[in-house]
Length: 262
Length: 348
Image (cartoon, rainbow over all chains, first blue to last red; front, side):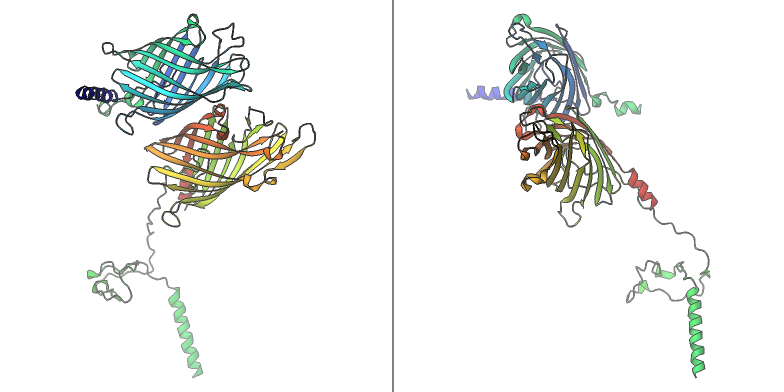
């Protein structure tokens, strides 16, 4: 029995140490945030569209120990007659985020990457919920364990419009990315997170779960195909989305000195 | 006998006058033997009372030395040029929203421009005065307004133009271990918004101290004042003016502070807690019409170059009410310039 435990610990340690070689960089699985930060001076861009034609785009800039993001998405929904309209209206919200964190093994061996982030709204248009605002303050931990990348965190979410608001509410979130050994360029991804849903006289939180596949087409870019389900929407209103990611790291892009010397 | 005395006195005076009219020889006598530079103008070697043989200087020229014209024009002396290229990063006069105990170096120009997700745009421009003071003009979006106590949509009054003057002493200037200390005064111009006239003023004293090479702490206190003029009573057209100092003095005093940590050579983590005024035009009680609200900020300063910093972070204007919806994510760029300092130094 003791020998089995030792073997399990050793195997886990090997997996952890292998996984800690380098942090990935994408700041989001599908909806939930990860604890990966872009490289210093690096840029990570994401753009997507779902079957309803709702689009999203985000650009993140790495500041060494932090990153700043700007973008727009339609993750938050609103409905006026919510009993008839299951899917609701997509609310285009301008979103900005500031994320401060530390990479894996920064403070002690085996430490997961951690990020303290805040994401809020700077513009809202194209819907009946004037001055809609949504803010998430979250703490997330991410760790590479062999072929799997696990993400676990908690978010304090507030949302509202005009004089109606939810109030700060705590919810957990989680996600994973699994890259099977035979397919090193392909990852199966999945996550769950809670988001505000704006209604005529109140704001409620609803869960949003997603699963899909990410294919690392080129070294600097990947494409994702995923499905997302919302609470109370039913299976028929699930959305299929496609998304592309691009990563630019100035250190990797800079020409080497030996090449310049030649 | 008397005539002889007059003659002697006249001779002495005329001789003295002639002697004083002659310029003293400035060229050093040529070195002789082992005297070395003992006769240089520096006087470092030939000291009165010195008994060292090597520092003895002959009082007369040796007979074989070439004659020297003591009245000849002397070539211009090449003075060592003063170092006129001060540069490099400086200790910043603000953490994120609160002042520090560090002043700008003399004639250094500082400029900061900021935008945030609440639509705020601010600018802060300062110049250092003689290493002991600084003057600045700025716009701030920290002053807020609401209609009454039930109003959840607190708006910012912007731009709110302020002028500031700070004086103090640098870190370790008076004694080792002494924190940097500044006494600052900031006052706004009168702002007319929604037919309400407001003004603010802030007197601060703050101390800053480096803790090793990678951390610093700032602690200070502020004494606030403000005024509000307009139709302050619901249902009445009468205009009146209300000032913050009409109320209790303890409401005007607040402590503030911040910390800086540098985990990477070019990146700093900044956290500070400050205060900003909020005007409530139609709150029932006069004591609620002007209030100070705590503002918590955290962020990162990334040194792009010696003269340029990018800062980004989060500002929660009223952390006391835990209102996440009012949180703002900001980005700002700071430039510092030694150009004026170099220009001033080159004139010396």
